[in-house]
Length: 101
Image (cartoon, rainbow, N blue to C red):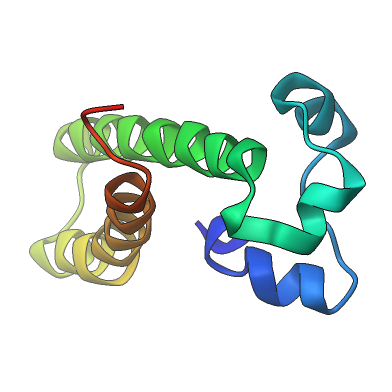
């Protein structure tokens, strides 16, 4: 979530949190970093990890139901962790045409 959320700020500060393997996989070149989220390749990377994030949140929620957590702990997980992460992922997916593209 934080890598996606802070991507433009991090790149502007000279920090690229996209692995070399992902740059190769998604065809991200150095010039794409200057365009950041307007780059088609970076948008594909953002979309991929947002989709993966939604899947992992669903799995987390399913596993959480099997755990022995108090109501308070469940609420903390939901409102402090799950909801903010889901919001970031869904924003990216919406901006990239989810679910149509």
